Length: 126
Image 1: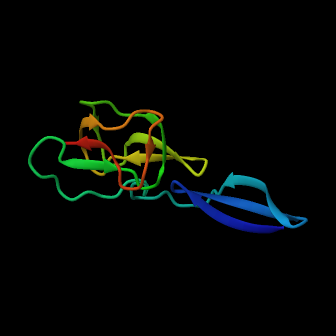
Image 2: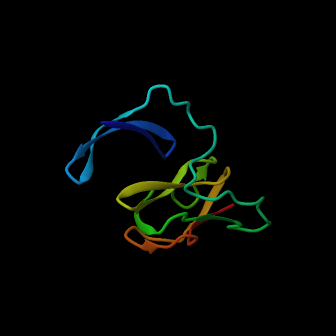
């Protein structure tokens, strides 16, 4: 049996893999207790530059292709950097797309169930 450490959305998991014929199958996955908490926001959304003047000046963009499974924030809602705005399913994982900075949601530019590509604008904020 081989042991690996994987990190998903900032949480480290210890995974044991047992050889089973020609394919390797995961045996167990549990959070790794000694993993330090990440200080930065998850990498689901790129950091935006300082906002320019005007409404909707900061774009919240998809970092991976996938399908929108949930819209977490609403127009007019105040959010802090790192707060989830939209949840995108990609490669059978739900990936939160987060606010790149503190601000207010100016618009939600996608609907649940919509297919998105890397770089597509999901929301704008002030």
